[in-house]
Length: 340
Image (cartoon, rainbow, N blue to C red; front, side, top):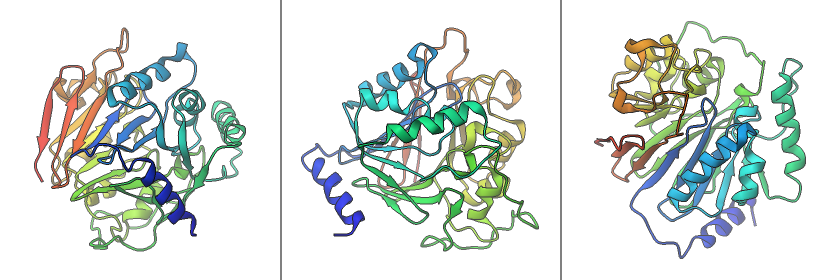
């Protein structure tokens, strides 16, 4: 039996008797400039994505645990590790020990990188022994991560990218630069597992921490992805990522940035997001102390206003099969629904 068939049967059967839900629910957890996301499918299956930083008096572990409790999660069907930088993989073993996962998904071997910083190197090296005895799936572009009721397609993995347009995509992208930038490897960001989520007519793109040179391989000279309703802002909103040609190609209605108080929300990224043809709102996990009032989102769209005494409020997305979705700020219960 092919490995994909076996994995699909195993994970589907595990949730065969779970109560059906009408929405795909996503909790974007505040780990102050890292990444930690919990997803619950309509079938009741659950996925953890990354996990933030280790240590810090278990700050990020406790915030993930609080969101997991709100989601009714005791264990995860899938744990997706997008890449091996410490703010993404460093806390994975701690979260796994509290919330075991049936399947670990990642991009495979760490690519050679003499410039990799010491903290990221330690986190990447620690992930290898952690994997022993666990069920692991290393994905390639074009693979579909098994997650019942939702199609999660891999667009990028380990500095490789889809080569053919997804159905309905493939149009020329007039926003592309005259020539593509050369690949750069300083950390593991460009190796991130980037995904397209499809739930009925709802489409979401999450490229983790891909750098601009890697993002552009997906949308230039032709847009291989198509449009998206929701964009998980790449790399915390840093300027090394979020290529304007990518944002123009996706044309999202809303974007969510997993930024910290002093990390992300670069001015050029905010301007690129605001210039997208269908963009209505940018949601932020944190008020940015460096962006200033003009470039921060309006207060209702920000989950955490100050780092000092920060409560770790999350942002929740509930998507429907008709393409509509609702985003809710847990700090103030402010919600907005985006029509299909």
